[in-house]
Amino acid sequence: MRISVADHRRGAGAGFSMIEMLVAVAILGMVATAGVMAIGSRDVANLRREANDLAMTLNRARLDSARLGRTVTLKYDARRHALVTESSELKIARSVTIRNMHNNSNRFEVRMSPSGISGGLFAALSSGDNMLWVTLDPLTGRVGLHTKDPQKRL
Image (cartoon, rainbow, N blue to C red; front, side, top):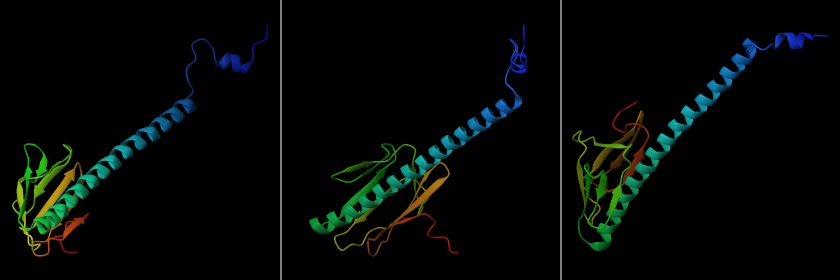
């Protein structure tokens, strides 16, 4: 009976070699890293979508005010987690937090007059470690979306 070297190494009680274990751990590490990065990018995309929705709602209220010839009011209802006008409601994702930076609260009310003048808004939207800012100029009604705090000077 002839026994080869390969048969002798892979006996009944033999396990994995150190190289095989290192390769398996490296592959698992790469898969875990890709998963964590995908979750982080999903948070950023969700935050950006919510900020864009808020900016569009503010713009729509400004246009509605001019079209109707009367003041339109938007209120953020923290209990319902929604931005509410008399004709619509924008639900905000539960993973996103909105803060009114003028008074550091999670409540705000914005009035848009037909002339374009508003009460202004400086809102910070956050999700995890990510943050975006939405601003509403009180004189022009212009809405801005910022990735850096617009009040901080370089």
